[in-house]
Image 1 (cartoon, helix red, strand yellow):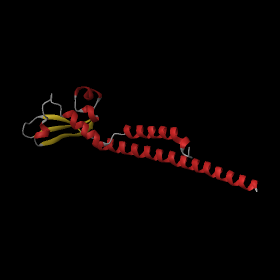
Image 2 (spheres, helix red, strand yellow; image 1 turned 90 degrees about the vertical axis):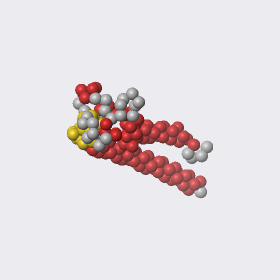
Image 3 (tube, rainbow, N blue to C red; image 1 turned 45 degrees about the vertical axis):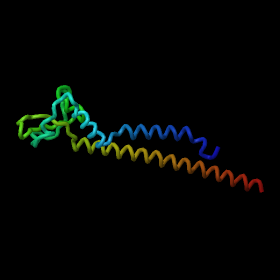
Image 4 (cartoon, rainbow, N blue to C red; image 1 turned 120 degrees about the horizontal axis):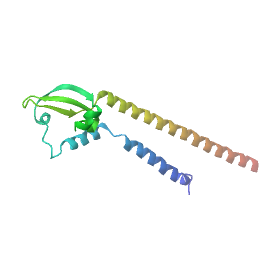
Length: 146
């Protein structure tokens, strides 16, 4: 085997950890797509805000524990806004994404990536030291053999 042959299991473990980190962080686009799929169920009637003009009656706010249990729209994101439809004069709730929550998710992602970068930087430094020691040992043996 070559010099990298023994690092196989470590690399596989490292890739598994990175895969878990990446899969654990769900991008906003994927969440929006899943929200669309959830709210487009054939059982429920089409919400008025999908087919009519509407006015936001209450801005995006975090759902209380009671609202999470009673308002279906609270489930996907934990935030909801109250919508007033112009034509039908109905008030409905719409799931929304809070700017504060988005900022929190972004900084958590940045922090995670900084930690991963730090771990890899330490690994690179350690590997370089090992390689330097091997090279010095090889040179020392060559000098001793003269």
